[in-house]
Length: 370
Image (cartoon, rainbow, N blue to C red):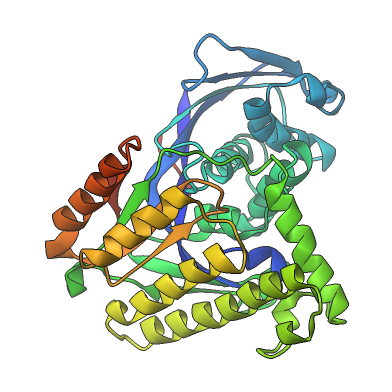
């Protein structure tokens, strides 16, 4: 069988801004979801996953919508992509899909988006080769939103499809959703040339974005925008959140407004060729805002951030939707081992399970392997 891969992502900065029509700055990872596939002569899809040994899902293409509620949660992501092809009237036939990968599940590295994008790319190449990247992103996002039931924005799927090696992807979400020119930009992000590294610390406390807390934050942002008379919080000025009388909505809006400003600042500095170390304080400010204003951090995430900063990180913050997952730290290359050991020691001192700490680099987006 032929194989395709779609990577997970790390968002350098720009958390919970994508569904507010804002700005994001992700990189793709070398970790990804691999989809091995071959067409079948019937109108059925047979699905297996290395992570789900012994489970075989066998469904009729035409009955996926009706069977959604009977499917296990993990299978709704890939089968949601198949369903989107069918629902849109795209040419798709019976297919065997065998899934595997290296993106930790629930670590805030967008394993679910990588899964959806890997299947979308696979089906495109097998059945609908004229589909462009924008259509693939839309299909993968729709599958996660409507079939898996997770109201994510466009960040994760865009990063998995569009990122390139050695670059960060600047994405203007409103412009992208409107198919406007200039919505994306590949900004050089050469860590090695600056003797820098990005460390990810996976706390081992997985999050589940389908559990309702993520949807609640999105609804709060929509309510804040409505109270301000705005289409979305993308349109809010710096002093607008102070006009909100509801304290929770005020804090949610404060995060989105300040986070958008941080993304623009980091992108501007990298674009101008500045030393990436200048982004460090903005990463830390992002974490403070996610912890205090958006309230999506956890004690374990805070612990990892504090340990990294106390032992030389230029900046550190939680990444992903929150409520668990991982931390990203910008460190000198020479300090990688010291910071890694500091995080491990701090978790051991608190009698917490050892996190997985590893370096990441800007990698290529989704592609065919064989």
